[in-house]
Length: 381
Image 1 (cartoon, rainbow, N blue to C red):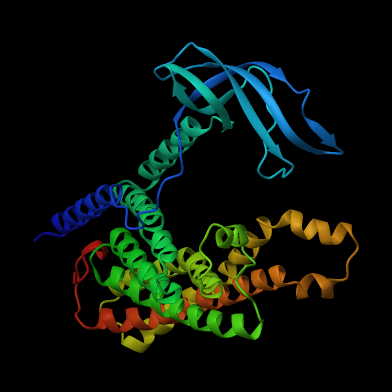
Image 2 (image 1 turned 90 degrees about the horizontal axis):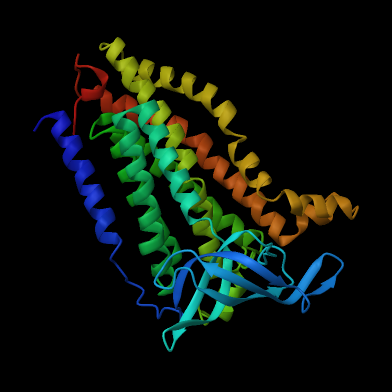
């Protein structure tokens, strides 16, 4: 089977799996009661019941809206917008805006309508489409495979990983299995069914296994209970009292750094691929040293990747501590901050070590068989 045909078959299989996952429901979780959901234009407001305490709004905002699509398009109805006082969850609406409305049908007419936020679904689809177009324009066929890998990763997390955790499967083993699956599909999809793809996969998994081990060790030494993640307490109150939140937290550590690990592993594997192509007679140890020299340069910039990513997502938290004038000891010793420090540093261990792991694996794999083919066709597995 030719190289192109193998790549095509592999991509078609992944696409088919994505379609199948769309119909999978392994959790068998009873869906919450819901009605019809459609776009609606706000034509009137009643804020008389809204209670304002400084910047916090509570109680209810009453809206009059006109449905923009669905079986009741053009009809007007009253909508309730419940305000809980949590600014990260509440939205306060204005006339002329388009929102998502959920409502029931009684006697053929819409009733009991609730506001479900500003309508963003079309913009999200447009953003996804622009992202795929950019990938295709920049990377061509490889970009298409990257987009397919992106969709596959999202489907596996949503349809397999999260439901399996809710069903009580061991978070660490389940997480490692899911990460191994995602790593294999992404590495072989982008890197091809070649020694380059295999090197990327092996180097990534070695780095992630190290990350997992360190996360298990230090989460216990830090005395982190796992409920430091947002919505963890709400998850327990939803009836899942037996979940092992600490192991779920550990799984989130190596899952969250897996993308950066695969990125660096692919860089090193592609470099090793090119070195072998340009110098077919290079020895295994010289090949490895060349890869390590490249790895040092790449690692120099990658070490701050997780720090900037996690710090950027917690800007307001750090600003609160600084605004209150609290000492640094209090900040760093707080459990939720300690959890992020563990996340950053342990994840960085995986990012840093994946370079030598991938260089070593690549050097030995590319030494197994010499070839003068173009890099994309090197010694397919």
